[in-house]
Length: 78
Image (cartoon, one colour):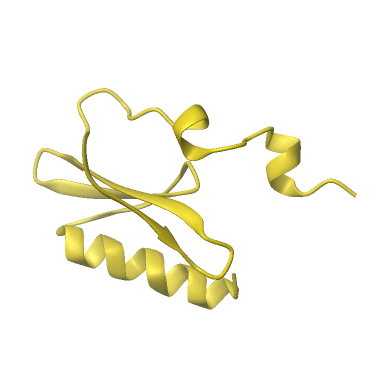
C-alpha cells in the first residue's frame, strides 16, 4: 500500500516546497522520529510554520512557531 507521501509524490521538501510570495525563510530543521522537514518563514511581523510542505499555522514569534511544530509532531506520534 502506498503512503500518503508517495501518493502526493513528494521526495524532499526542497523539490516540493517553494516559499510563497513575500515570505522569507527564518529557520529550517528536522523534527520527529521520522525526521520531517519543518520550515518557519516570516511575512511582515507574523511567522508561519510549515511541516513537510503543508502550512501548520501563523504565529507571533519564531519561537512559538518552532514550539508548535514540535508539539504537533509529538501529539501525532510521528
